[in-house]
Amino acid sequence: MNLSQARERYVRTGGVELCVAELGDADRPTVVLVHGYPDSKEVWSEVAVRLAEQWHVVLYDVRGHGRSTAPKPLRGGFTLEKLTDDFLAVIDTVSPDRPVHVVGHDWGSVQSWEFVTVGRTEGRIASFTSMSGPSLDHFGHWIKQRMVRPAPRRVGQLLGQGAKSWYVYMLHTPVLPELAWRGPLGKRWPRILERLEKVPAGDYPTASLPDDAAHGAWLYRDNVRARLSKPRPDAYAHAPVQLITPTGDSFLSERLYDGLESWVPTLVRRSLPAKHWVPRTRPDQLSSWISDFVEANESVGGDGVPQQPVPQGPYAQRFGGRLVLVTGAASGIGRATAFAFAEAGARIVAVDRDADGAARTAEMARLIGAPAAWGEAVDVSDEAAMEKLAARVAAEYGIVDVLVNNAGIGLSGSFLETSAEEWKKVLDVNLWGVIHGCRFFGKQMADRGQGGHIVNTASAAAFQPSRALPAYSTSKAAVLMLSECLRAELAEKSIGVSAICPGIVNTNITSTTRFTGVDEAEQDRLRKRTSKLYGRRNYPPEKVADAILRAVVRNQAVVPVTPEARGARLLSRLSPGALRSVARLKPPL
Ligand code: NAD
Image (cartoon, rainbow, N blue to C red; front, side, top):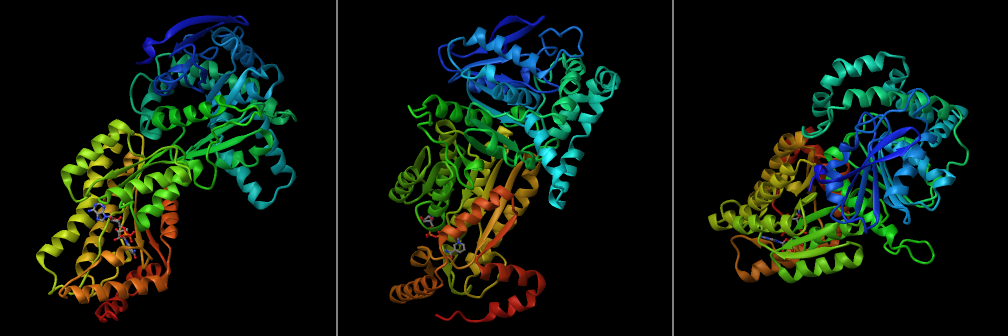
């Protein structure tokens, strides 16, 4: 389906004709998408076709944009009051008897804040998803609070947003913006969007751009100064709000939304690492968050509280509804990581060669909060099996947003006593397992072109040489370097890569680690002894899981976890000679 298959009609209101497009089953709840500046409804095309699989989707060109006519005169024709008249005229036509779910981006969000905070739309809006466009009233109060009590931090916030608003001042100058948009800027805009905002070329922006941008300058002139200087004191939303914040937005500071809770009855916050034009660059993520929010607010109980609460918590903003795949998820760090993502509301694919363990992790993940979770029995060192897994996951659950290549095995013993077979085994799992994961799932992520994150579990052994762990350390050093190289390559695709380097963590790894050059009885003794040592150290895998989620949120490159890992990392840089001396010591076994 695409936007050209939409049913189109014109709605007359207040001296203009609005071009309205509809997709999807008109008997389903209605989602109205409102575009921003300098855009037309086509900015939503990727999101609209995805939403139309489930909802009745309505888009319209704001007055003076796309195929809607412009008011005459332009001055005074774009006030928020008039834009609200337009919105009401549209929803009276497309959904007269049932409240609609509004979604706004940029100026579409600014005007939707007006819709959801004025009395005459009460009962007509079931939910509002806002991205990159604050309420001018809330913004006005935000500025006032910072002027009245100018603590240094608040002044900094004010100056920060002030610098990001340079284009707002420009748009207030007479004639010049119109000349620029109808001249060189209009011509270059698609390339500027592609280069600076990473907006892929396609059916957007449309040929109407120069006119849209020239007319839309009146959105600013008719509203910004007036509202910011006299913000309404009662701009309270009468519907639940979902706020989606792109963390790399060049035009809006995240701080603008501090204190938003006091203006809305329910607030769900989401954030994503992206620039301003998210409807073009992150349509999968947006449509799934919009759908989840619409669904939650469609199944409202008698008490007015949604029956399917949207997960909250420190990481839910970022990972709610995302698809996360963890290998080695049947035990230890992998299982704890799957649970941490589940708690944040992510959908989980738990992969392990231990089928029962993977299934159990999936089952528990669902109990903890994952909206869906699946166990998959796969040996990560098996290239064909990993390729098949990637194809199956993409077909059945979607493209993975966060991939955690964590499966690994231990191997301890001197180099001279390590057989070729043992080398092969540890490299097959610890290194090739990671390579297969990155190749198959990383490729899908890159092809989708909507960002993502890869986490590889390396180890402090990656930068701490030791005579006791030559094969294991080599495999982990390779994982660390692979992660660094991949990070450099995938940055341009907005895919982050992190290497996690734990020290001693209390997991089952000690009971499965192979010790070279010893008989079975000695093997058993060494495993028990190491398990006891790790148990005494007692660093929980949950803390590593927490570091993994944090690494994704902050897009950290290399993350040593545990104090000994952090110490070793520091020494490897400041005093590698000291680490080399430690490497010569015989392990106390
Ligand atoms: P663990 O033994 O508790 O868990 C590892 C999991 O990986 C197990 O469920 C196992 O079945 C699975 N696995 C092993 N080989 C596999 C394969 N070929 N295919 C699919 N699954 C496989 O160990 P852990 O401590 O949780 O280890 C997780 C990762 O952390 C490993 O890469 C390990 O090297 C690394 N690590 C662990 C420590 C530590 O002290 N525990 C320290 C640094 C790094």
